[in-house]
Image 1 (tube, rainbow, N blue to C red):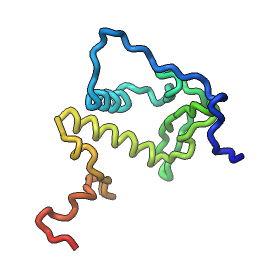
Image 2: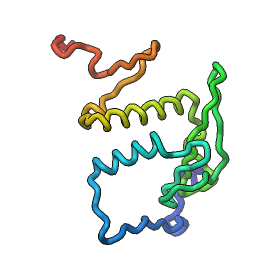
Image 3: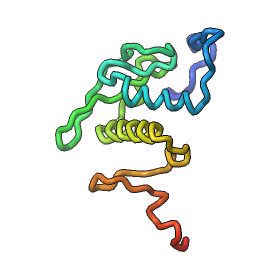
Image 4: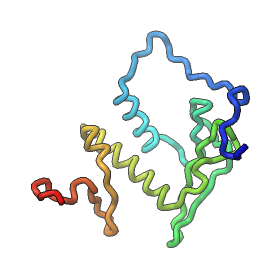
Length: 149
């Protein structure tokens, strides 16, 4: 078998979803997404927490915190994401400093858009920062009235 093959179901540890109190209010998908963005943009302590879907709550990372350094010497903490099938594996182990910076930039961008009441189509509009640091949208670079090629 391949090293990347999924383990047999009998080898997968039991994962229990956190229990919700019977009288707890239900949240819409939009509210859950907003809470997700706010948590990772503002509350998550990247320098000493790991992402664990298996546990379903905040926890110390199961593998070592890793710092990545850019060519110009900028050093940032890379995310630690637990692989629930192999606790010694960090699926984000190959992320670069630029990848970490873009992740944080996207989380901040989404947080601001949500706070300003942006629509989902605006929130999910693809964009990339230009080399000068100003943001350009891939979907709106061509004026809307321009003929399509």
